[in-house]
Length: 200
Image (tube, rainbow, N blue to C red):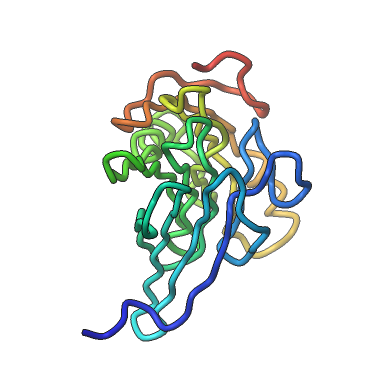
C-alpha cells in the first residue's frame, strides 16, 4: 500500500500568551504553514499528497499512543482548539471564493458543518447583492464548546472598478449567528458590525 502522504507539515496549538497567529475571543487561530511548537500536550500535524492534493490533519494528545486523523481537505484551513480541548473549530477555504466552518469533535470523530444553515439564513434574510461574495467565518466558542459564533464576512466584490467596488461593497450587511456545534442548527441571529455581547 502506498503511504498516505509524501510530505508532512507540522503545526501546533499556540499558547494564548504568545503573540503569534490571530487571537479572537480567547481562541488562537493557526495555519498548517506555521510551527510554533506544542502546547498543553496537544500537537497538530498535517500531511499533503502532491498527487491527489489531499491534506489530512491529525492531533496527538499527551495520552495518545499515535496521532489521530480528524480532518481531510484540499486547500488551506485555520484551526483553533476549543476551551474544553475536545473540539477543533475549523475555517475551511473550499475554493478561492467559497468557505465553510466546521467543528471536529475529538471524542466521537464527527465533523459538523456549523455554517450551512447560517449561510442559508443569511441569504434569505439579507438577500445580498449577487456581486458580493459573503462567507462564514468561525469567530468564537462558548466556554463549554457547545455553541459557536459564526460571523458573515465580505470576501470579494465582483466589479471592474474601485469606485464601483466601494459603492457595491457598502451594500454588505454584516450578521452573526450562534450555532449549536453538535447539530449545526442556528440558535440566534444578530445584526451589527461587532460581535454580540451575549450569544450563548
